[in-house]
Image 1: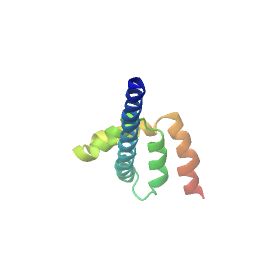
Image 2 (image 1 turned 180 degrees about the horizontal axis):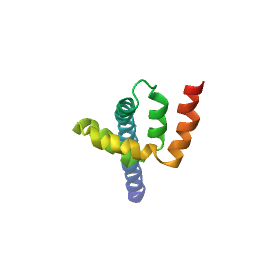
Image 3 (image 1 turned 90 degrees about the vertical axis):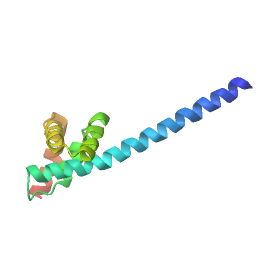
Length: 107
């Protein structure tokens, strides 16, 4: 009986950790989206930044999303722009950009 209670407690503990990790990742993703959107607008004035932002966010790792979100708090714009450009230069991101961002320009 004791082992069942301990197993149940451990399960609930890990379930709580999983929920908080998901919440942290979702929050980081939303804050990072704002940072990426600003960086895209800064690099490409007058362009609809949304498709670019989505491709960059979708091709970012959890660590990169956290670093981008952290840059909003630290106000480290240069580091954020460098990271955004690094992510944008990846083949998967470039392919996403070609399909989504350029498609919206060409109609």
